[in-house]
Image 1 (cartoon, helix red, strand yellow):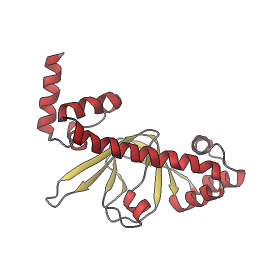
Image 2 (cartoon, rainbow, N blue to C red):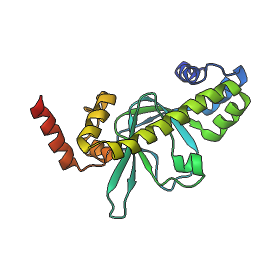
Image 3 (cartoon, rainbow, N blue to C red):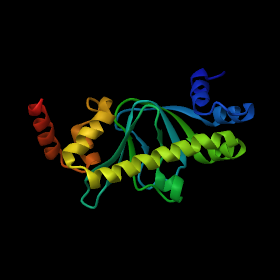
Length: 195
């Protein structure tokens, strides 16, 4: 039986695929649902999976030497999620990727996807776009720590991601911004009194 939801998602990702490659992707891609707090990827994992978020919210975090969880990033609908350690460096993941809410993904094997892309030059543009987007996000984050105060970082983050304010606990947003939850609370209070 044809999974039309999977077919629709794959079509959105790669409109220029050949019929055989669409079949290969549909055969290998899996719809999967994660409950809140469930892990997509855990530290030490080497599975070369890549996730397309259809619905939901994922946080990536690392556990420091004190045992504290440090949130590195947040991803939501229409983002691609993968461990850079596994995909880019071929080593075990140092990060955890955890669902923060009910999350539906399309899960694909990265190596199979690479094989299909290598046979479809038109798809190379999509792959470059995804990597350029990841690089741009990383560059903007580095620049924000150099160029902006914590308050300016918070304002810019919320302006560019307004949907997250009611979906993500403040402690995770604080981690992403490189400040403490107490500092974030003070910033929010200061901004509220300015208005």
